[in-house]
Image: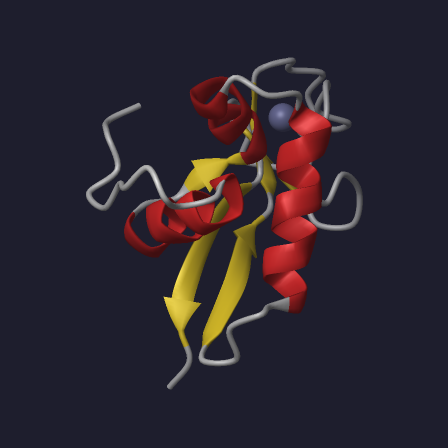
Length: 104
Ligand SMILES: [Zn+2]
């Protein structure tokens, strides 16, 4: 994962996630690895960002997708990656990706 474009020591992890997702799509696990925290803390941050302290932005989620057949996991696993494709049994699943977009 590349360095975020905006990074100051004064920012909280949640603010940093906000800045990262304004520029690039990331999965919750990628963020957890980057910040070296457990996935559950990133999930909590994402829930908070989704509710949004900042009314001019939206947290968008791209659902998990099977890398083999393209099956999209619309209902299950809103944030964590599912482990197996129900259609082709593939275990290589693209985790849900998040991005923050400015509301129009
Ligand atoms: Zn599949």
